[in-house]
Image 1 (cartoon, helix red, strand yellow):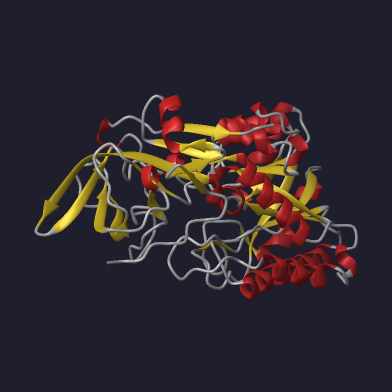
Image 2: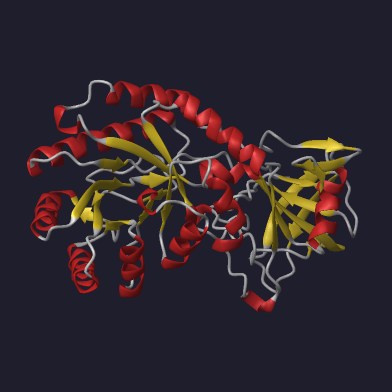
Length: 411
């Protein structure tokens, strides 16, 4: 028997069934017309944002990283809750603009922007986070052809990373951003070209649960931008400090202490260097805002025993939840929080392995977990499904249909 991660707060039972956003799992599946189904409870997102704002310095703006979950109704709902949207493709840019966010509150990062994507960003007037000198040259050339003034920030590849992060995005040789030592010359070239320099973007890593490590990376980012500003001789208008705030997916994980992060960040920004006196700051967060608000519902199609092990075969799988299957960068496969939604809160009776419907042994949603007895037709709930679910999974694999998605928003 293997453990699974903690079920996040905000979910309850009604008559023995999982309730999401005031609706039972079976009602939601009926409304959607079928399973598998992603359900996002926006009340939980709003509560997370409110708690985060209370913990952070008031002067720090909050941006949503659309890549975490680009579901259009969710992005539209985010517009009124966050200060900015950060996108990483032309498709995400289109969704951010369609959602109604003002262009000046949208930034576009990513190491491989096509010319057409740069042109779309320039035409819309959003901020482009430059990832290289070559990209800067292309953006300036396209802007000149279009007769527009480009709004350009520089993504900095720092000389440090985020300790304990799931994915290290900075430090050493990276495809992301411009090495810190080359940044001043690049910024000066933007001045010479007549561009509107909008500041810096630094993203050292992601999915960290150690508050001290997160605070350390934020402090190092502030220090680095002050050093760069001094070398350039001009204060950056804005600095996007990135994020890296993690959520507890697995057994033994503890939630990130955002109050400690906020207190440490306040201590760094209060006596900030003179070079940053007029600079504004933001944090760019994705999974931390939406990850725990999502649930993936999938229905049991078959129950079988093989060599004494019980398998629950569902109509879902890794083609919708690649990360939960352990195939999204995880070195050692561990279990996400899971429950039998049709018998939520019932005592565990069986040790089962839950698999999807795909013809591959990689398609495991839960491995040897202790759950209430389940039968064909029951619903399984995989939690922590609000980020990097449908859009980060190979939905076309084996030509199974895509998962449905529902946003519960009572506003």
